[in-house]
Image 1 (tube, rainbow, N blue to C red):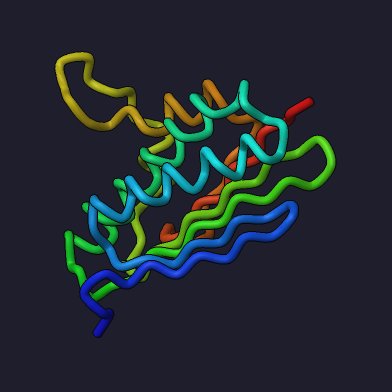
Image 2: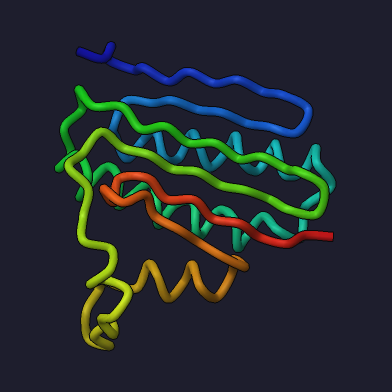
Length: 142
C-alpha cells in the first residue's frame, strides 16, 4: 500500500516524471510541478492548455481508473522532444472502452464527459493503449 503522501518526482532537462498516490490533492502538486517544468522549458504559452488537459487525464485516472482508491498509483510524464511535447498518464485500473467514448457526443447539460473534446482542441494527437488505462498526448510546440 502506498504511503500517506506518496509523491515521487524526477526532473530532467527535457522530462518531468511523477508517480503519485491516487488523490485529488496530488493532482494539484502535479499541476504545480508541470508549470515549473513548462516555464523552465520556455513554454509559458503552453501552461494553460497543457495543465487543463493534464488535470482532465489525472482526474479521470483518480476518479474512474482507481475509484478514488488511495492505495493505487498514477504515473504521469511530460517530455519535450524537439518541437513535440508528449504527455503520458497511466493508472492501475481495469481501463475503459475508449473506442465507444470516442464516438459519444458530450451532453451539454452534463458536468462530465468532455475530456476528449478538450484534449482534441489543445493537443495534436492522442492515443490510448488497448486496455484503456494509459493515455498518450502529443502537442506540437514552437
